[in-house]
Length: 173
Image (cartoon, rainbow, N blue to C red; front, side):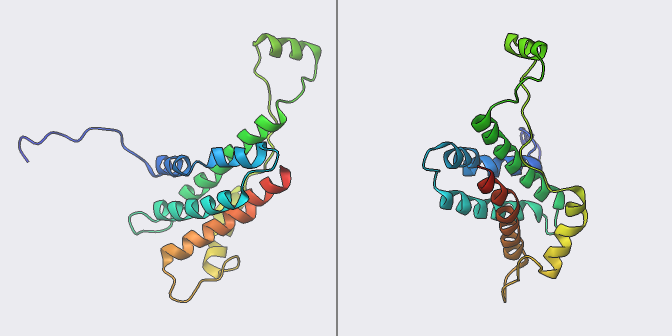
């Protein structure tokens, strides 16, 4: 079209959409409320948000109608792990310096404090083989009659989110 203004703006990638979905649901705030309050925040709120997150991720991972983009799903899990690690850092603080000189350098701001990784991420083998195999064979989640591919994938992702990262987080905190 002549005279039409060219499109401007940033290109949003599927990975960007994962981060947007995570932020939109306020998962960092919910994890903090759950772990950092005396009475432990409302677990049902986080569980519901993880279901919503699974639905969002299923839509992003199947956008375009092609194959399931396992890389997008893995990134969604990694984003949740990042949030969990952030809460663990706030709750437990940095590692103690191993030497006096390391302590002095850290206190003076010349060396950043070190934080221990609290949660083990799912490994490459899980993402390369096991995730899709369990999806296809329905080992973890049985498909409901007349359930669409998108709905089944969303339910499968949500079950994996609850069974892997979230379960470890609730036991850790």
